[in-house]
Length: 297
Image (cartoon, rainbow, N blue to C red; front, top):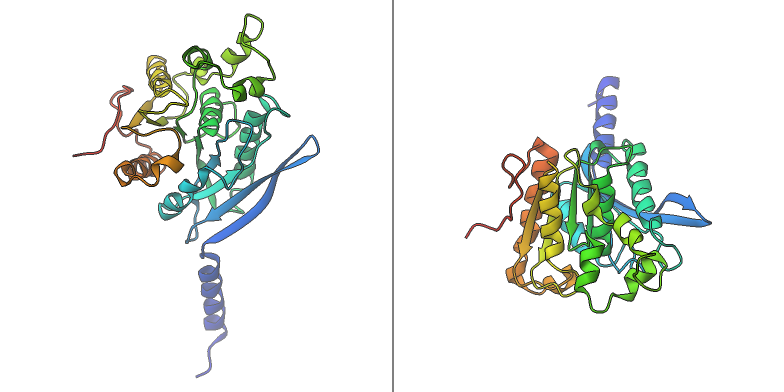
């Protein structure tokens, strides 16, 4: 049987879309050149033609360590399975680069994903920020200030610092990583303004994107109260915020992974994100009220 020209073209187009719909992985994408450094990100695109909701992922490591394939990797598979494209970034680390260098890099990564949305089959209206530990602080800082050109659809911060002043009052002694982040030797009247400026709680406002804060209640590195305070202040300002307390959990997803009774947080996080990017709803929130969410049963 001889195929017609139209049939041949149809088959070719069909094959093109089938191939283009496969999942794709990208390594070491240069998203920013600054101070002689090429800042890199890795990316994953799920199966399908898109456009996909996207997550910009920001690793932890106390602002002085870590990279795009450390600490944050527990997010990769759940996001891909939920139909999200993800972009895991490197950023400038202290003490060589002090605050706000890292936050500026997060903003640059968002801008890159937005400008290249069609290339990566991303819906620029549905970009979310997710960070853990030091990365949790950075995404909350960027999200609360909301100075990026692209409006962020949502922010998820896992056990991040939101108020450096209250955190430093609780720590004894103040971790050296915090001092190195700001390039200071001590916290006193001359340096405390730096801590205030870097605290997401002072930027909360009614127009900030919806926030989800996930935090272990037995966190000995970043007090659980940091997330409670941030959420309450966001609510007072008229913003939307939810807290998911992971009962009995210490600091870090790597410590949660071996404890099956803690892993329910993954589905709770995915459900929240799906509602944010698919239907524009504000789950677990009633008329802007902020309240903890716990799994049924």
